[in-house]
Image 1: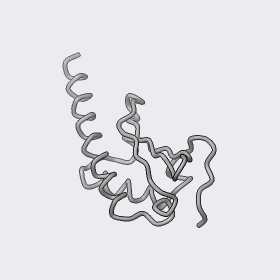
Image 2: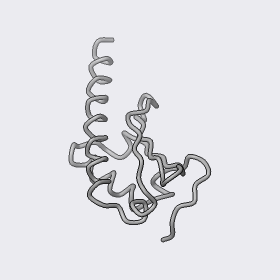
Image 3: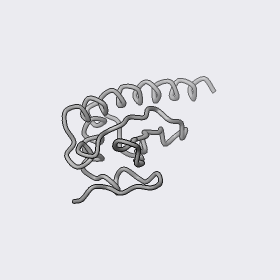
Image 4: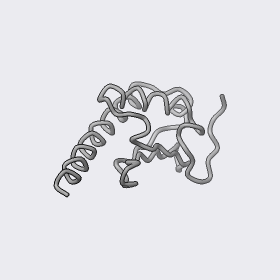
Length: 103
C-alpha cells in the first residue's frame, strides 16, 4: 500500500487502514467499540493529522500528528498516542453517560 495522498479530511479506516487497525486495537483494550469513535486523517505539513471524535456527540476528543513513515508503518509511538486518546475517550464517554443519567 502506498502513502496516503489526502487533500481533505477522510476516514482513517479507508485512507490509512494500518493506522486504523492500531487505533482499534488500542481502544479495544479499554472496551471502547470502534463505532463509538470516528477517526479522520488529513495531510499536514510534515505528515498527517489524525482527529478522533466521539460519534455520540460529534465532539473532538483529541488530535494527533504522525509522520508519513508512521502512516505507512505504525510504530510504538503511534500506539502510545492512541492509548492516550483511548483514555481521553473513556473519560468523555463516562462523562456523557452520567449527563444522560441526570436527565
